[in-house]
Image (tube, helix red, strand yellow):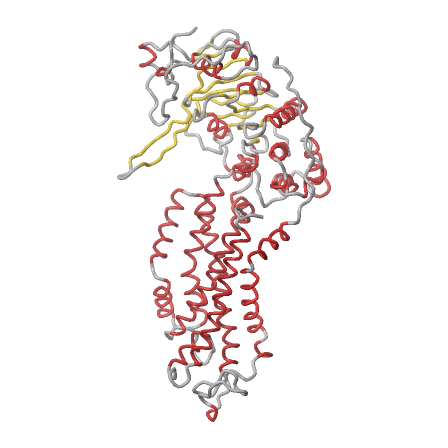
Length: 318
Length: 298
């Protein structure tokens, strides 16, 4: 295993009103997942289910409250500031909005060279060569190095963001909705690029997305999150072909299929997700679940192994 | 992966041709409003006067001549003489040196100190931020003049203490704007990207956040320089400025006050000098704001 994340928890605290009342939001409630060398794991779920927090907590961009993160046998959460900076060479991130992910006052070439300088990996001619090489790898001409981010289109900016993530030659890239902000045509280009990089460099990915089609194209395995918990995971194709958890079924049916003969999204009643500030007891999904029974309202269903490498948290489905 | 291969419908676009450089674009924006140019011209004239005072001043600003005291404007003493017969124009020109120097140095110090504190406060947040913001709000709640009076009264009037007093009164404004802008910048993903790349906090704060908030700080600095010059004039006017016989604008206004009815020019002319610099700096500030406003049409 390259990355082993276990029982990650994170609660955000806040204050509301006057006199102030403490509020808390359980963003991660015991999230575990593993990623092997060169493997892509998709994390899907609706807005606010904690998938981005899971991605950021893995890199300690958000400090998790508990659990463990192991990268290649090294404990990420226990690492001191210096060890963490070294570890970060190996785990990089690609962001959703490429306009916000690049420093507007920094030339592209400088943005790509700075990490190499900071980590004392290259300087002088070698530095220039590496910057050119990584620009070429993401499909940008060497002349791009002299430009500022605002001079590029959205897709090109995302290429720059990817180049920056690659320049330190990481083993794992955490991609938080990397194509959601792009036009559909550009999405395809960026996905192709990521797939090529994944194969060429044997890169592992944690790929966060709400778009099941994209995840299906890119990821070998997928985990489905709901209100801070992983409720089902398994190989992508079987997970989506034969979803078991009622929530996965709902997600699957809500995702459009490019086939006029396909059944149009069946709506499941009580469609609103509950507030993460005040999640329902037991299984978080029970207020929307067609199969909900008394045990669902009282007990949290544990994640247990189902068939063919699949894991499932539901009282009523085998 | 069993998913179907996605088509590649469009060729990747070409990288855009180079556009006019940043400075050129900034110049074009700045010159559209005109305020920046007029303001810069007014301030530049004053700065040149200050620098070349010995060459420009028609008389020695400290030479007393009891025979020529309290003369009105005339061909020899263009703006007249004071109660000791010193040339008012020369004293205003030399006064520009002190007034502009005090204004510039105290603003520069306040920018450096205030911005550093503000960025640290906004970047780290939490307890550090609450402490700094609380102290800052406390400082801000004192009226500037009162604050200046207290500091100079405690330490005694001298140019150094004047600069210290004005700097301390100006710091809170820069702490506040740097903190606010930093918090806004921190929401952008590039700050997280820097952390993910293993950059240190100092590098992130001063190599990445600072350049992105420099616009707002520059605008505020030009406006505050006007305030600093006014504060200097005010403190000098109430006798807490540079000790005589040093010529400063505020001091000149005050000295002229004793003979206001006989020779109103003694107070009016240095007031006009203060006015020109204040208007000039405010125009520069407004012009810079227009020039750097990202929402302004290009």
